[in-house]
Image 1 (cartoon, rainbow, N blue to C red):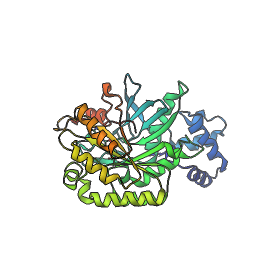
Image 2 (image 1 turned 135 degrees about the vertical axis):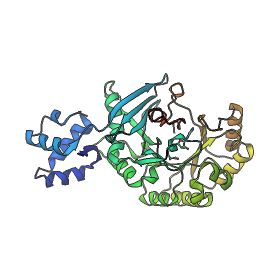
Image 3 (image 1 turned 120 degrees about the vertical axis):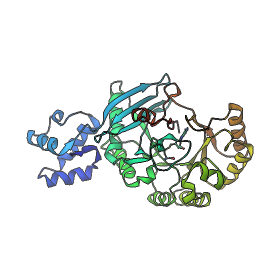
Length: 355
Ligand code: SAH
């Protein structure tokens, strides 16, 4: 299989060209065609010599994602189902906000974390996506926005998969889209969300990156968290909170805790008080998510009143909190749902929502 050209950093492409006995500056020209002019074929790169175009065609692929399905919501959210080269399907979501457009990217095909409210995990993990497959999701969506002269301004790694279980490729993906010769998405406009892979939180802290770290918390006791998020059995709350403290100290940046409210499971006033006490000493923000109903599980989202009550307790305790606005509910903008349909998987998957 030829290499996906979007998996390359500029440095790597320069090295590759030197090995091919080509001039180093050609890599910058190619990057310009890939990321600024955003062409669909090497043959469109008309300031390159013909023999170099032939070499590129021999060695690289430029279109590794095939758009299989697109669903558009009234609120402007668009869900994409792409087929990758080995035949599997992945989903990405484009969301329109007041501040611009954001893309929610998948990091794996399937997921092995086993969170009971999330359907990305149905069928387990197929494989990691590589950095190029992640970059291509953003580039393909940017190409569609180009028709209206619009620009992807932020990226969230909150689609299917656990990015910290695919750390190397996720970090490389971030480096590529952040680079000034590519789409140049600012670090502060990139968010990576983890279910709590503690050793990787330490590693990420030590990188001192400006990328926002989101943590899916969803419960305040080990008993409940272990029940709904099996990763808690490997890395219980105490270890997770210690890792967040370390992150706060090293980076002086706040984390964004995601707290999905499940009716009758984690939506009580007592839970809200415990949450306030747990996160009070931390630099953080809490994003309360009215959980998306998942077919074939007993979970439901709590009534509005209950959600508001939960949020009020946090506010009263001085916690910085927002309720996440759902996106694309009329099209079931659930990451993985199209893929699930395609693969006859029955459960709905999680929704990409506003951070
Ligand atoms: N594995 C990573 C990133 C992917 S999930 C993580 O766990 O953070 C992205 C977000 O969607 C997480 O906060 C996850 O808990 C949430 N999510 C999963 N299922 C959901 C559902 N049914 N409704 C709403 N959010 C959900």
